[in-house]
Image (cartoon, rainbow, N blue to C red):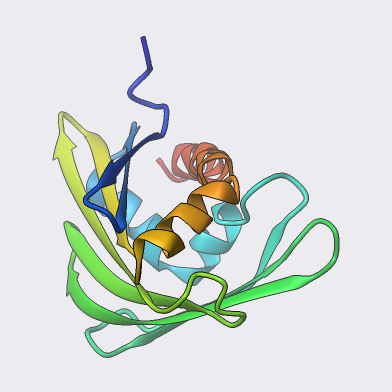
Length: 161
């Protein structure tokens, strides 16, 4: 049986990926760890050896975000987006577009945080421009990278709590 602390991934429709993960922390803390640049840089690096070099977040509708990762084998990967909705601490929606647009266009990420008895479940839905884009993302090993990042987020949350 899968632990609720394990990242689960399912497909929704022909263009979306839904990821769910439980954290042993209140949702205000999880929301902050997801939206405060200095905290995000501590956990959103991906697989070991990668770093998140740039993390800029203007957390308001119409505000921009910018991430630049340095991958363990040397190259950089950048992504920009715009916040469409922010409801602290329960939900945010933003666009994502990679500098080298290997996903075939802008994606929309919706994150919903629900809390029960001091534990938070985050449900993240990413809608891609096409079924082909979604399938290409799945082929990258994205699930392993996100699982690694969420394990690092567990450690950040424990250090804050």
